[in-house]
Structure formats: C-alpha cells, structure tokens
Image (cartoon, rainbow over all chains, first blue to last red):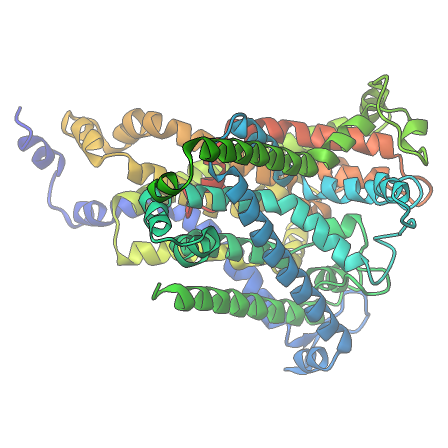
Length: 308
Length: 286
C-alpha cells in the first residue's frame, strides 16, 4: 500500500453528508467548549442588561416593573457609587504601580545568577498561591492591635499600637499593602523571565557606548520588554478590579465606607439588599469601566513605546 | 565591559564584583525573607497553643503542638470541607482539560484569521469580573435547584478555567511538530487514534501542569463558593470563615486550617514552577 492511496480510500464516497463531515468535521470537538463558554458568559451579561432596566427587588413585595434608564440615573447621581469608583481606582492604581515597581526591582536583583537563587525564587512565589481568604485572615491576625505581631514590632521601636484595618484612613492603604505582598511575586516572575530574554549584547553594546546602568535600563531594556510588562499590568489590573475575598475577610467594606469597592458594593446590593435591578445596572457600569480602562492602558502602553 | 577593564586595575574590579555579588545575595535573601515572613508566622501559629497565639507579646515557637490540627478535624466539619474542595477542583479541572482540549486542538492545528478571533474572544473572557455574572447565575441555578450542590461550583470552575486550559493547551499542541502526527496518520491510524496515541502522550507534561494550575485556581476560589454552597457542600475557603464568629476568633485553629488549605497547592506550585509564568499569563509570557 502506498501512502497516496490510503487517504483516498479513507475519503469514502462523495455523498453530500460525507463531504460536510470532511469539511466541517474538525469543528465538532470544539462544540462543547464553545457552547459552554458562550452560555455562561453571554447569558448572565444579557440577563443583567435586561434586569438593569427594571425596578426589581427580591426582598420587596412589589412585582418587578420596567423603569427604563431609571437605575442608571439613580446610580450616576448616587454619591456612594462615585465613592466606590474612587476607592476602586485608588486601589487599582496603587496596587498595579507598586507591584510593577517592586517586581522590577526584585527582578533586577535576581537577574544575574547567584548561588541559591533558584531556592530563593521558589520561596518567593509562595505568597501568590495562598488562597486570598487565608491571606485576609492571616493579615487580620498579624495586624490585630492587641496581640498582632506587627503592633508588637512597632511598639519595640517606640511606635504606638495602630488599628490598621479599623482606622478609616488606614484601611485602604493596608489592603493595598496586603495585595502588594501577595502579588508582587507574580510581577517579579514575569519581569524576571522578560529580563532574561533580553539579548546580552544589547546590554553589552549600551555599556560600551558609555551608558550608565539606569540609562541602559530605561532607554534600552524597558522598551524591549514592554510586551511582558503590558501583560503583567493588564492581568494585575483586571484582578485588582475584582478584589473581594480579602475585603470579605478583613474590613467588609468598612470602617464606615473606606473600602467599599465596586465588587463589594455589587455583592452587598445583590446578596444583602436583594436589589437585583440596581445591582445589574451597577454591574454594567463596572464592566464598562473595566473594559475602558484596560483598553486605554494597553493603547497608551503600546503607542508610547512603539517607536522605541 | 572591556572599557572598564582597561581603565581600572584588575584586582580592584574583581573586588568590586565580589562585593556586588554579596550585596546581591544579601538583598535577595532579605527580600525573600520579607515575603515569606507572614507565611512562617502562619505555620508557627498553627503549631502553638491558644494562649501562645493570643499572647500580647508574640511568642517564638518552642514546643510545637499538633493539637490544633486534630481539633480542626475532629471538632469542626473542616475535613469534609476539604473533601468537597478536592472533589470540586478535581472534577472541574478534568472537565476543563477535556473540553478545553477539544477547542484547543483545532485552534492549534488549523490556524486562520477566524480561529485567531475566536482565541482572542476566549482570552477576553478574563475581563468579565466574577461579581458581574454571579447574581444572574445564582438566580438561574436557584430556579433549576442547583444552588447548594457541588455541581453548581463544578460548572462555574470549569467555565473559569476553560480560557486557561484552552490557551495553554493550544500552545502545547502548536509546539508539537505536525509531522509526527502525519506519520501516524499515514500509517493508517484514525484522527482520534492519532490524537490519543501520539499527540496526547507527547503533550502530557504540558497538560498535567495546565491541570495543576487549574486545580490551584479552583481550590482557592471563594466568591462563587461563598454564594452557591450550602451547609453540607462548603468548600475549605468558605469553611474557614466559620472559625470567625462574633464571640471568638480561634486564631490558632484558623491558622492550622489555613495551613491545610495552602499546603497542597504549594506542592503543586513548586511542581509546575517552570510553567507558572506561562500559566498565569495564559501563555503570553513563556
């Protein structure tokens, strides 16, 4: 049997059905996965869109009634909505900026090989696989003003005991620090992999030109790794927007409303007030905000550096 | 480099470099310690008695006790919560791998403009915040009687992990030279046989790391589990919240339960270290 005759024999008859199978058969294995993805992403978003035009509270006795854009009007004139937009944006901005900066410093520290670097790197990645729920509880324990280790260490150097999570001015910065602790190892790993991909001769050539190391970093290396940097930035951005677990375990939106992020507000509206219509409108505004900001971030990152 | 060598005496350069390495090792060690200190504190608290855990002057661990671990298993339902977590994470991971491979393989083997669009649409699903989809899905699951069951979680975890498995498997399939498959195909194997006997064994290491990553994400998930599970189907992260009550917070027990949640995924993370960056960036950074 020669190899040319086998495919021909397998092709079978030229009936229309066989022809369809031959042409589109490769699509069949994709059906379950695609159906699943489409169903679970499209159904809830369209359901929310529809619900957002209704006055609909599961806790109220009144039946749901169509109100048009009323929910959106209420939201946009609701100071607590704008408050949580600001809280979320502050959180996201600081978390992303700090994690990228500290991640880069760490990556530069690990860039040149040294004895035991693989061992240290293996330890460094541990925080990011700790369940966020555990992270929240662990920090709540460490930050406890009465018996927490942080208060104790602060008192050793003469600082007063501070209730980090209970003070309205400190709660949000504290959550930012917790997020930075957990996710800097992630940006570190991405940036380290990126740095190790930069050809040695680029650095070498710049050095021969007499460039100082800071200049080499900003003028030559960073433009070369802008793609991994963009990936790290967008992934952290998307994750920071959805922060929920840590808040659930620590501040629950408080003290007062200091840590009312968008995710937390929607959770509150949906599962505590059962205000489905309002929560749906909220969800859509959040979705629009997330899509807009990640698009803008990507556009800026690539336009600014593309000529380099 | 050569410029420096010409200007500075060689011995001094070597000395400077040695100081540089020492500073580098010291800096890296210090940074690592800073990042794992909270974890060490968690594990040591898990091995302390209640009095030591609540002491106003934090105690350095002297005599470790495993009392907390036995307490967590015997006095609470945490053991069964760990079982639920393991079940939900394992089943959803296997589903995401099998269904994901079905999407990933054609995408890898029949590249084209439309396929690229499909792949990017799948990736863009990561933009969707979970809180945005959970309310409609909760109402849907409630109307069909799925709330409170572990199956509602399995459905959502499979969904959550599908973009990951599809993107990673697509990369692993694409890395496999098509000639290897063609050889088997020409030898008379059917397409399915070729996939099962040739493609799968060769991409198995990649598929296993993908699976371990998917498992980690499902194991750590909290929002869906918190909303959807009932008293008998709590996952470990949800069960953790039960050690926190208005009357008392049993920190030593929480820390040992937390250690139990974290330990298996650490082992997995260390096992897939090489693929960790690739996995967490959906294959965007290798």
